[in-house]
Image (cartoon, rainbow, N blue to C red; front, side):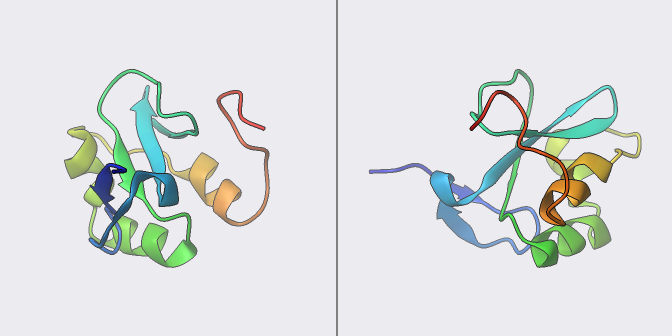
Amino acid sequence: MEPVRTCVGCRMRAPRSALLRVVSQNGILIIDERAVLPGRGAWMHPTQECMASALRRRAFGRALRVSTPVDTQTIEKRLNGYGNKVNGSK
């Protein structure tokens, strides 16, 4: 049985394989493709709608337990189709 996580954007539960793990490193949100980076992670569907909803609700700060604003440019570029996958993925 595959683990289930909750999307920080739409709050729907989904299998871990259907979601992206996001971590904060030095105030910058980074996509953790292999789910191995240290620290707290937040899970979200790889869609613009879930990203917008998470930003509107300020869900990343709460889920990652950071009090400072986080830089979301890396994730927004990825969801818009720019940039490559990160963290050693194919």
